[in-house]
Length: 212
Image (tube, rainbow, N blue to C red; front, side, top):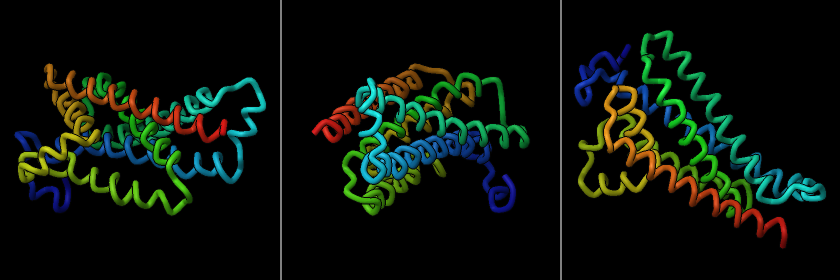
């Protein structure tokens, strides 16, 4: 709301800072969780052989992956809480943040799963450039983060709703503005299904790599 932001009067009936804040929370959840589940996990999977060493104990591949997914989501929540604390200093918080935080943890878990899937397909560290520059960064621009989806051409609007961040931003923005409706529940269900599919794919992919 300062600097150039002061020139934007409103966005979708609310101030621009209120419009952007939910998107910032979701983008932080996405970025931190995804990166936490890529480079570090790839190192433990390939170069350090950490997972192979852990398998000498009673732990199973699924337990290892499950732990990494939960840690990636937890690390993402650290980032979300950091942004939330700073936002509180600007008077952006409301009672609805209590409802939004569990949804944001779901967002963190979803992108932690996506990061682990990317790790399972990576051949080297440079492989993550494709998933980051080809998917994560464009998604952060086309998911209703900086401007309403209505401003996009129809074709891009349809594509945007195929992206998980779009559903995350839409759900959190509606919650923080007190707009509870069945659409919010639909966005959350879609994210749960996406997280479940990506989680199981990561289990299968990493299991096959560790037990081959």
